Image 1 (cartoon, rainbow, N blue to C red):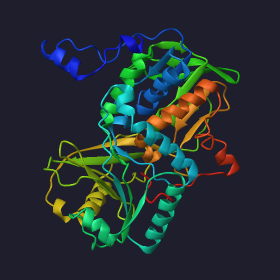
Image 2 (image 1 turned 180 degrees about the vertical axis):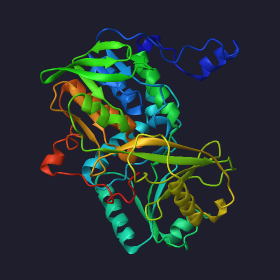
Image 3 (image 1 turned 120 degrees about the horizontal axis):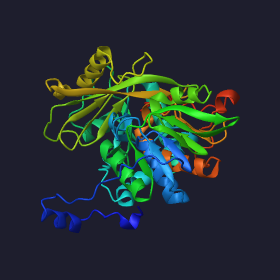
Length: 419
């Protein structure tokens, strides 16, 4: 199905369907049976995988693509995060890749013809010590040199802009960095929008189709074994987040990543009280308010490794203690629900977006807690890498060989907060 055959969403289509009680809307994407072979198989139907498929079709004219998802679209990390978008990383390699993603975010709803609810409400990274403030100043200056917006604020300025914050807490707020172009987006809408747009360009999205093996002939891949049989392809792009090491092992590779649970929670709905995103690395908590009024709260990863989509009570307790310390006004707010995702982390807190030593096999993984904000940029550069069998300049530094050469991109503490 081509883009021209996909009905565009508009005020006119909304009015037209209102007369039929909204019973005749076109299916958002097809559910076709898998073909015997494809030009490219994308393993993983999360945001990054769907974006990869979309940009393969849009930018490189490769539409004979299958996206294989073991569950349902939006059931993995794409629907299990805190939706924060920013690009104010320190090192050039990371900052420029995230900035490319930010630029795509800014026109994504129009590009996909699907409202991803991207809200540029700004992101604050708080500083609680002199060293925090030195690091923040360094990062803001580095951002500006790369053409990325950033502002250095004092504690007083933070209080003026966010009246409900407590800057005289146990770890006093001495200042913050502020990126006005940062903000949040609707995670489900991002997955659905990319799925719809990829499908419209001919990509097959196959749900409930778990990959159980990767078939090789010598040093090249020939296809994948799935619950629904063997599917052949000369190129396999793996984008499976926390399960990347499992898929790599199927091909005889070992990746330098660890998988950890990452959890978040939301409160009962409140009237509008917080119109921005506030993050703190020292007390390790971050909070924003959704359009429905819920406080969206997150923290760092659990220290243990595992594949469970749940977290631990200690993280929740420490997380809420940090948020209440910063915002005493929230102390009596009740929590509504909690969830967890699985993040794969590299030693330098930066991703792997590269081809491997096995011909035709590509991996996009290791994003840690920064994956959601990178969704469009990650798919854009990975599609380039898969289509041309060579990296784009923006992801050339994110190859696997850096863990052999030592050319790491250490963003762990450099960016103020790793999320």
